[in-house]
Image (cartoon, rainbow, N blue to C red; front, side, top):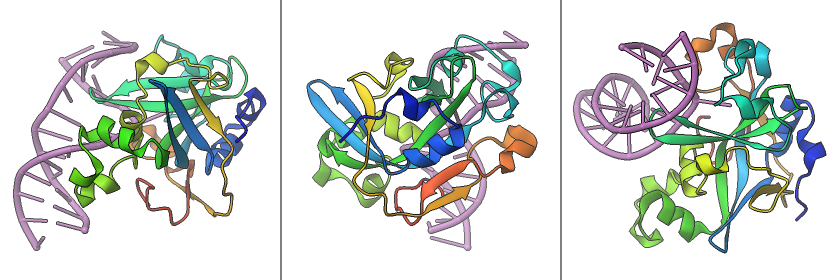
Length: 203
DNA sequence: CAAATGATTCGCT
DNA sequence: GCGAATCATTTGG
């Protein structure tokens, strides 16, 4: 399928967020392809968004990728243990991005399972199967996304996103997760997910 | 099942 | 020093 180009990412963040649903995230690593369909995302709307790392024009080494060109990765470390993967949107200087929150495995399922649990499929319990990639930290673990992929160009050939097969779904909007400090911005409906998809982190 | 709690490191003040 | 765009585990109904 066709790889998304710079023009796809260099647009209004809310539109990019919604259009990323149903697309397929691909990571080529160790001569292998791991891929999964995007089923849940959140938009972070730049310096005016109290929930965004770039709020108030904050510009530190960590946040810097958000200010960069559209179509690059912003990967940050959180809660002492997990990574979160974002796609940078809009032109250079405009610090907006889309957080990828949940996936649905397509290729490299065994590899994802090993990355997450260091086990084989038949040794997983029901809870582990359900929790393979249904959250932003979990999916980074499964897809081998870490700090080394921060600022990676998604228009390159290591980590990228391609068109999906199926666009026959309904998009639901909801409040974003884990941003209780964001005052009125915590109620904005800037989380989007595929209605009825079992991998969505919070319905 | 749901709710509560503890984990563990980095980035910034 | 403190808080974080989270998750696994434990506890209780």
